[in-house]
Image 1 (tube, rainbow, N blue to C red):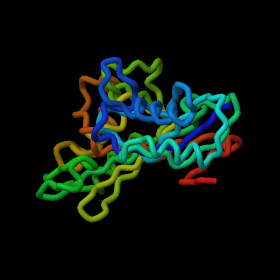
Image 2: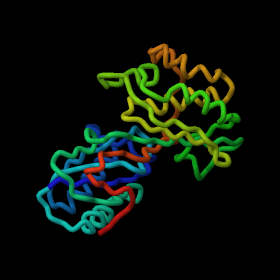
Image 3: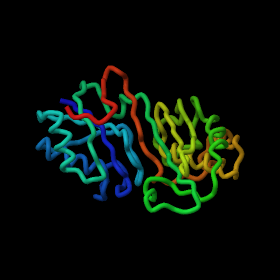
Image 4: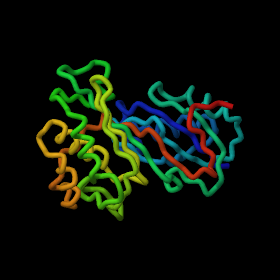
Length: 257
């Protein structure tokens, strides 16, 4: 039987999603250990998108195979009892064997949160990036509009990115302010390594007035990461949603049957 699960986590204390050979703490390791106790056998999970050290997940999706038979309530509550407080399973459902958390995904969405005020925050220190210099979110939005659509994002991916093609399609890229927080919301068919953080770095430079609103397009046209902007810190980044074809019928919110 193949099961899909919705996962949320605070990535502050983890060395990213992926299991590490060095044995350092990862989200995947915590989830596999918890599910293994419920299934009563070793479990290997596959995720929709591997997040880096310090990055958070609100809408992460995983799948795994198991011969164990448990009620949905047993999977969710059993796993959560064995998980640390900063990782949580929100829902579970049975899926067909052709479902894959990563390869079946049609879209992914992220949010990047910038705390924009003169003083740092004790509450938001691991959940937003602090920027004391005033940001003009209207200029950031103008810069963002150059990136919407299908483009070669070579300038916006990590130098070590292993994706075969740098072409991606951004369907939504919005910048707005909520009080002292500037929030970047972005959706695409898929993302390159560090792509969101590199976009955030460029847009923040525009928002500070250090670059023109056309700089985001100029960086795009370079197709050269070494000519791009600074990679923004990880703690402001959240994986918020993963979209799948409707026939898989995955839940969109916390659910225990």
